[in-house]
Image 1 (cartoon, rainbow, N blue to C red):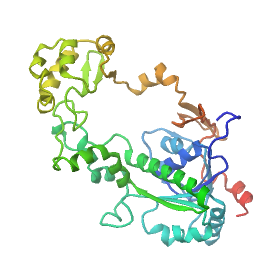
Image 2: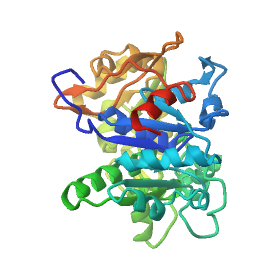
Image 3: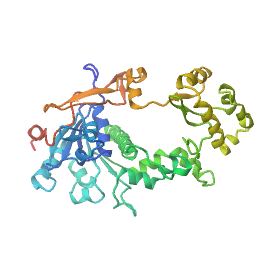
Image 4: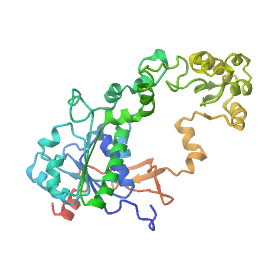
Length: 386
């Protein structure tokens, strides 16, 4: 934010006891909106995601994913098995506005930091919990890990071609969606607190977030005779949508084509074989693989720019499929100003993303990298008298 625009959550204190991705993603979003985030870490190793490597690159002894999701936060080292440290943490919670935790069900109760216990310390606190599968049921003790949650959610059967079997997302979509969902809940609870003066307990899980992510197609399934969708066996892009919806290889890349009447595609791409399907919309689904093969055979004869020059003037919904290099070099991305360099006192420097939100026309930028374990412990203890 610029100096003359105060972030909307400025002055709010978030105590983040979570680790890995879901909870830290939530506190990252709150931090980008102006909240102060104090990250609680074990003195002996800290957040386990410090060693969760996506590649062999590490920066300052920590993984790139840790840096990406914990930039701008402060680290307070607390040994939860040490009575004095636990007392200090409770004292900090008396002053906090928000607390986030994603321990396995039962752990937070054993620590004496469950919602009912913390509510007695600070009845105005907004307390947020993220689990793998909720607080009860047969999965509650299972590891709440993203790939496993995707597996149990049914989501994988929407991706890939029919003959591939289940295809997972190539990123931790359950973690990110759960973090985003609990962030929404926290913001709503803060509004309620402003009216009633009372805090709330916000809960979600990876499974709940992934089920909600599928609300559109699940609603179709539940009200369509509970018929499972059949993915296209050729260049599938959506289990329920008909041809030409898909991604097609061209001479120099890939072209995505969204919902478009087959009759228009027939004329614009000069594919006379599509005439048999043009006036029969039901065939666009029942015969979608054959239709898509005809389109693919035509698209591969030209370049992306050629086909865009044909399709875009006719208002056909299409786009070149970009890789990260092409995305970052494109003016459409550059104008969003979504990259920033953050730094730390031990010569750590990392280029990462910014908040996806703009407030009053301004995007929040920061310059502080993710903290070392307990980097801010002395200052925080002195400030809060811990």
